[in-house]
View 1 (tube, rainbow, N blue to C red):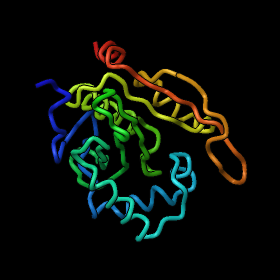
View 2: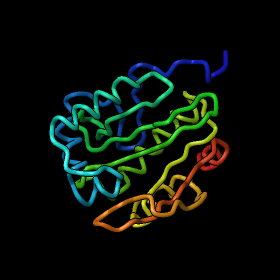
View 3: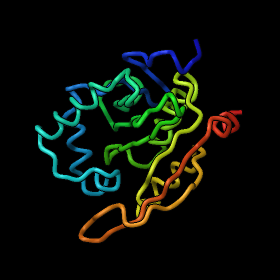
View 4: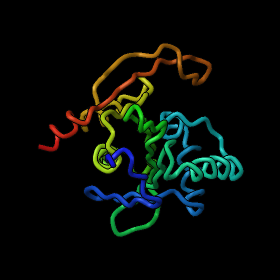
Length: 191
């Protein structure tokens, strides 16, 4: 049996640096709504606010049903020594056949900057390339979000291309950047 035939653990717990990742749970609804409804943080991460409790519950219920499947794994980002959510990160559109998945991340406003998201990405990439056995992780990012682009570049993501007029914000269409990292590139950054 290859690594790709191994099921994703039902409750994977991952750690890197100052953070650890645990599955998203109902208790994370308030934190999730705060991230999504923060116009600076949530909108740059691709959420369209506002969300109330019903929208947050529906989103979480949809994602909770995917854990351990070929669709994706969704985590709360927590500071080491705490169980409180400071962000969310996930590996979505997971295809074990194509050995690829899409990373997405959103940190709360108090934890934007200072490397919190970078550490969360490193934990998720170690999981994706190690435990899950992927060869490629990709993402899309708003070109108007240079802070996120720098964070992705810091962990080794490379620019692949540009998607034109993909994000509508304040009545104006913005372009997105496609970025990816391959397993070999990830391993080289860790050497």
